[in-house]
Image (cartoon, rainbow, N blue to C red; front, side, top):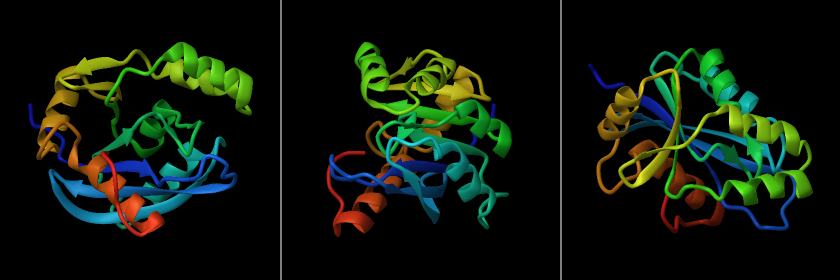
Length: 187
């Protein structure tokens, strides 16, 4: 089995807790661990346009033919703007892998969605539809369009140091640096 190595990894930029409106999203386009390009767009804080925004960013870019998979750091961007990973995979015709460092406390997520987030029921359905989180070493993942061994091969092929794949680490660093003037924290 040959690993998928040409990917785009997306992460959102930091934003103030009280911020309402749009939040920057950055995509790092990589071949294995080499940065080949950067995509940038915006999604609504706690909105419902993340899937459309990611599809438009990738499909409208010069990297469209290069990208063989999409990676995300968590299933939501800009708070609770939940990505429909099945639709993202289908519309771009590539697999999608979502990774997180810690298994989320799903009961708390559900409560927050239903109590404080517009469209919470729909967003919860998207989270459930994404499937259970699978532990892979120090990370947890959800995947669409590839088998577990293929997803593990993708993670290994795109990880240089530590546990976080380079496309996600780079997207995190770029988003933070562009937004706050310098990058900080872990991806």
